[in-house]
Picture 1 (spheres, one colour):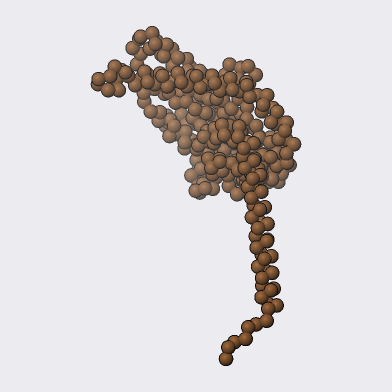
Picture 2 (cartoon, rainbow, N blue to C red):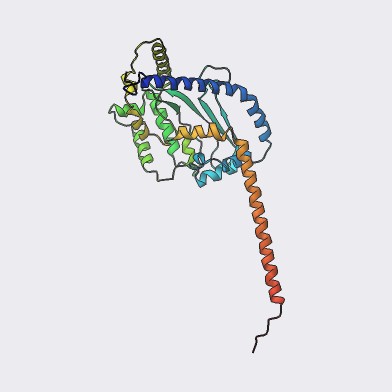
Length: 325
């Protein structure tokens, strides 16, 4: 294995192993944090559920990495109908031995003019690929839009149809494309619709169709086990080289992107789970403070207008000065 400098015996692989050990520690911290904060989140839910428009106000103050994805039409729906938002680490919350970085984000809505669903939940699984990639993957979630109210203009329904078609056929759309296979009619229609989306024209609700890299649970489990074994062997002093598949950059990611309707959907999920969800009270408080400042500004403007009117009235009542001859 190559060293980082000629005069140093340290290899890049040793540095990478240390990074992965840090990653293991951080994962265990998240696992413990989930258990320690569970009762606090339950307490918070009981309290904020009694505050009218709590979650719409939180969304209104969402940080830029979330707000940038919300179109005006999305905002109208979220601010008028969102009743609750919750994040769960579903693989570990009930004592499971899964990965605590997997999350489920659940949105609850009151009756609205856009769709029939009262709750929409999207799950993200933390996976590892054989080439070394790690991150969140998901499955498309359809929404029961009311007639003429689909904010995604059929895109979400189409990606769900493509997903169902691939699952029924036992194939992976992106990998089939990488092998040179022809796209199906539905895949072609999806690609054409994605290509036709204008800049900034994608609804936030298209996020529910995010898929990410096509990494199955089985592939992730195998890759994780093999990586652990290699690290243990290196710790024991064996010269274990990185497999060719891990050393090479994966070309399949580019193919995945061709049928991905919401690039960056995993980062948006992280922003919601790691920032908006734990910081909800902070964002709600900011919204209240902003409203208070707006009220003060409004009252100040009224006082200035009244003062201006008074001065005008006084001016009109004063006798005009005589001009000097």
